[in-house]
Length: 579
Image 1 (cartoon, rainbow, N blue to C red):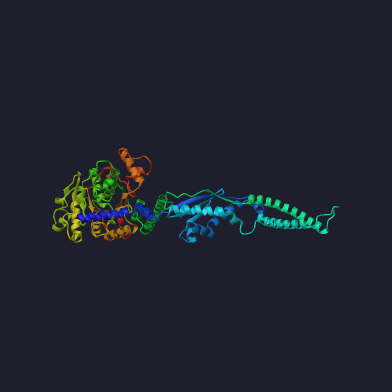
Image 2 (cartoon, one colour):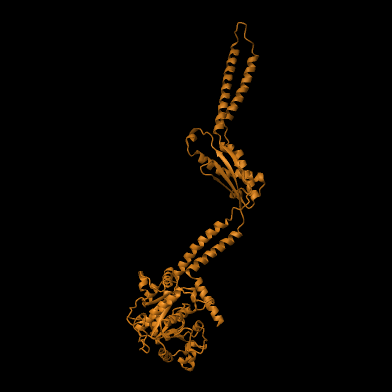
């Protein structure tokens, strides 16, 4: 028994774990875990940054009219900083054991917007080495910047300087020749050769003077037009790694996990669509919705077993839910002259035993004599809910033909007696006989106003279909997200095949603020019914009309009334209560 309860608890835990919200949370947690592990295992990288200023000179020619000259100059500098010659010189100066392409992958130069500044970033596993590379690269670029921008051609100063040097040599030669010629005669006459050479020297002096003036102007223009590269700030070894960025990675992992979890949850819902609303359940079954029971902690003990709400001290939303469910069920039973109701579900873990026990409590509080039968001979639970011994009970009646009335156990709840499942048997399905069950149901129906028969899930074993075919009516319990449309359809077919009458459906473990808010406000107001909206009519089950003298009006269920006709109708669904 203990091992079986543990298995049930594990199944319940897995079912909750695979709910929509749980899938999203689980996926987000998994993504965070993967990101965190990946971040912790990633190597630490350090980034050192140096700052350069590249200023444009007084450009001449077409460049002086180009408003984008500074931007092009900055872009050119960024390209030159990662050029192969500069990288090779840096490797040579620092004696680095790497290729230029490897060093280029460590360097990231970027311009500072709206400034003449360039930030040279070098990222590596060694912070000291990263700073050294950034400083050396910036220093070499500053030293060679003008030569790099000017190219290999001669400047105007160099051309003029060459011309001046040549002219100076020529002037020296001509002056020496002039000095070697005979001086002019006393009358001031000289030879034609001397006069020609003197004129040539005078012309060369004028030319030399002009070249010196041009050289001075060219030097000034070149200084004005020169592009200056200056190191503004040297790089320092960083004391913190630049990657991995733990906080950013975790945030991104969380976002991706939530998005991925939501997508996975939607995909699973499309693959296995569950019944997610009471309206959907009612539409599928074409049966009255007798009530909705909210998901409440008070319905479970710490050992994950059903709890009788009478044993819960604090007033809870579930109390009012079961009172209303009892009222609706009694009304439907009275209208259809039903004494024996079988409660089943499509799949296990719908909370059926919890509903049976607390529904009996609600009916007893309404003044009805109730007998509860634990018809689940495989996984009985009602004896534990009511704190009773498991046997003797139903199995003893079926095996030894004992008097069922004598085996009824009085519970702590006034007006509620229980026929427990009895001693465990090897093959429970073999005990069920239509003749035995009918006699047993008739016998118990004569002892109380209403008999609630707890049965196994109808898709799991045939017990529920057999009991449902002999009872006055069947109530189908479905937990929110606990059954798919296919499950509900299969349950209806099994019930229709057996000839059972579906009186109504109960939507259990409902999650939603609207349901809890309504019940909470109802309980807090001392049972006064809200005065607006649909709440004025909630006590009336959907699809069921109230009749005078029914349970809602306080009239008792007539004992010994004729049983409902269980003939099978020709339809795709089990017969539902008409009215």
